[in-house]
Image 1: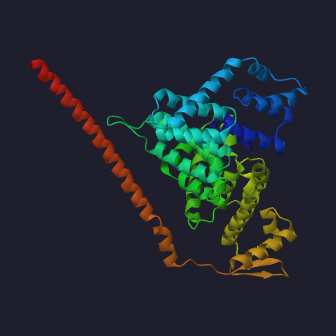
Image 2 (image 1 turned 90 degrees about the horizontal axis):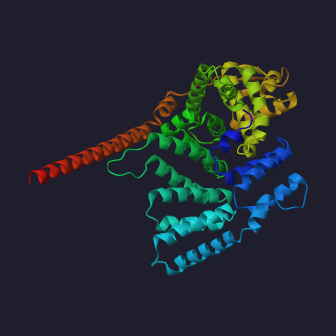
Image 3 (image 1 turned 120 degrees about the horizontal axis):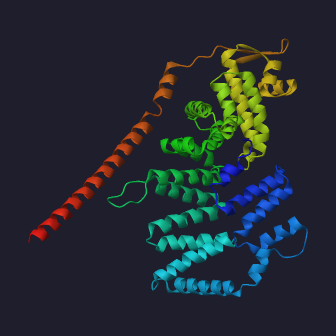
Length: 443
């Protein structure tokens, strides 16, 4: 369970897997030769011939060209075809208005060709033009997926977040005919891919983690995570633990329920060894042992296991330090709710710190958050003052989400009414046609 690369990669485009393999090469998680072979196998299916040739030479310690390179050099018809496509695209762009569907298809094919050879900026520009001009909804959506992949690989996170938002709207509210209903299975598959692709954006954009929480905590995406992507709970956990959003306590309560529910579900599946490994994810395990079992010893073990997992995770490695620091604070906050007088040595061991580090950490925390606590240097203990939550604050916390939930309920009811109206209109139109046919036959 420590490495989720295989599971995430199953939902990614092959070009998007390359950065993950580069990360694993850097971290030396697996043997270098195995990773290079995996990278070469990916590149063989693309048109990035020069990169594939370089990897081939590294694997075999030779200066000979790879079979992919030889194929390219001996196939002049492919080069001629690419030149013809490029000419057609140029003609289309120059004429602007007098274009044909064949030229529009050429634009799309040329964009895909640019993507395959690793020219992501060119592909993104062409796919943008294609989406502006096309009236084919399905191809427009496919082009948006391709443009999102380009922006991710170019690391243009602001533009990628905009594309991700557009894609989410298309998935959640697909354009349908009057007689059509949403295909729930198709939406489930699309949301599964969306969850995997979105990790690149959410963990690199400055406001991405808050967006991840807002998205993944929606009922439709919670259902998707529980059905097809239980591994995504690791990333939701990391985002909630490290967020500075004022609604963090509410998110944390929902996360505790989700993790407990997932553990119960996995425990009921007795046959699969892989599902038993899923239960042992240290990040979700930390949340479960701390907030469901209230077991500080087990939460300490889970927290200790989190560090190597975070270090080897492509998406979470940059926030490793922030996660561990915040997790220790969460342990301390839970600890002081149970014990009024705390031995710093015992607390340091629970937090995974040395005695000196633990003492300094506790002093800095008490001063930083202005907790009602005193440090007795003679007995080396922390004495907590009485902590009470005002009734006013309790009322605010309990009613904070009422407006959001009411609006969400009203929105769902409105969508349902529109669907029913469309179905009734379609049925009425169908009956009217039948009556018209019967009348024509009578005449």
